[in-house]
Image (tube, rainbow, N blue to C red):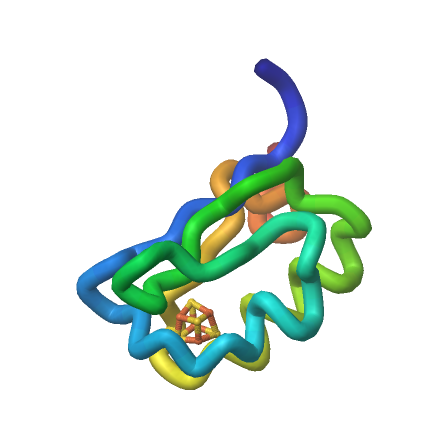
Length: 73
Ligand code: SF4
């Protein structure tokens, strides 16, 4: 599998639904109202907005292309 993947830290997720609003093709809620990934992180801009909007920093991209760029890799 290539390209960035998005992961949810379930221990941090409070189920606010912000990520689902910003990137509904990527996130949904499970039966515990925790965010789960249901698709690729596309469009990437929307997923980045969701990551930045998460109040508990429960979301991250791995690998993050911007971090790699900054590190010159
Ligand atoms: S925005 Fe963060 S806290 Fe809210 S549902 Fe998504 S992952 Fe959970």
